Amino acid sequence: MTELPEASLYQPRISFVSLGCPKALVDSERIITGLRSEGYELTKSHAGADAVIVNTCGFLDSAKAESLAAIGAALKENGKVIVTGCMGAEPEQIRDVFPGISAITGPQAYESVMKAVHAAVPPKHDPFLDLVPDQGVKLTPRHYAYLKISEGCNNRCSFCIIPKLRGDLVSRPIGDVLREAEKLVKAGVKELLVISQDTSAYGLDIRYAESLFQDRLIRAKFYELANELGNMGAWVRMHYVYPYPHVDEVIPLMSQGKILPYLDIPFQHASPNVLKAMKRPGNQDKTLERIKAWRSVCPDLTLRSTFIVGFPGETDADFQFLLDWLDEAKLDRVGAFKYEPVSGAAANALGLEPVPEDVKDDRYKRFMLRQQAISSEILKKKVGTRQSVIIDEPGPTVSKGRSKSDAPEIDGNVYVASRRPLRQGDIVSVKIERADAYDLHGTAA
Ligand code: SF4
Image (tube, rainbow, N blue to C red; front, side, top):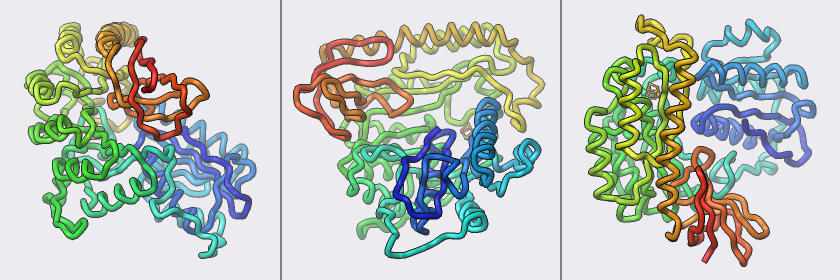
């Protein structure tokens, strides 16, 4: 959950709660940019605000529960509550629990959110007080920013309701994406995190249409996007990439140092039976071979992924297949979820045997233990090397940062001892001296 810092004191004031994934965070940033451009101020406390906006996440039942709790707290403390985001796509779920909500809008419904805010608290717009920076308002610290390249998804993974909530893939014109990235870098952003539901499918819906950027026509395609972003002088990190064959073309950009040697690929499983039931995109059969080939081109490549254990119909043999696959793939960073049926997901109607909760728990623990051993082995090998580290939280003697292998919030940290003061966003060379299960420790040169 992200709450915003107290701003200066003129009215009207909005308190904002942003829940969910980085994609939802980008939606929040857009709404907040709109609010700020109309003269609304942001406040930390619900009680002192004229209205509260809650940007919800509706992906898993646990996320829905968190969203409902945030709405309940906002209603109690304030009373004027506007709900937006994924859960807003099914408003009755919210109205049934909280009939007193002022307005409910779905994901990416920026204009409807603004209309609802106008109805609840009319704006006091004064163009001379319009303090929105050129690059918009960022909820992430100034030195890194998420760059959303498309909305929606053309895949139909059976456990996922995102296409229902957000619709099919709609790619932004590449000129717009690159201009936004350029503004962010000019404003001091040192790391761009490229996000979408399916980054490697970028441009498919617009037939990879060309658009102008710096007097050149550029195709809206994954490779061109990576290449152009790689010219901007910032770290560029690719998230939510599916292993389509054209991803291979981007690996040399990583070995050349143009973009970070980092791929976040949500594999979700390895067993062909489970992947088939999950209806996952990408050619998953030859993934191990592809990983090997990528590593031969770019030995420093970091692979991060997420997995679901206990998907309906997952047998002991499927699970063992997954563990053996993990041993071979040696992924650097891995997150896992125990399968939760999401209401409205196609997986519920597949007629597959649900995995009992105790079996899910056991598999989850075994999975995490196995991966922990792999990840710590990989981290140990970094002891004695030099790594470039971006500083997130400077400290008097030890600062917290991340190496090229670590995305913010989801991966590990590097704790950097330094005699000279470091600033947020500095990129420093660090000699790694120690590794623990998730993090590295070292000294700045
Ligand atoms: S790729 Fe699959 S899991 Fe990801 S958003 Fe699309 S349908 Fe959902």
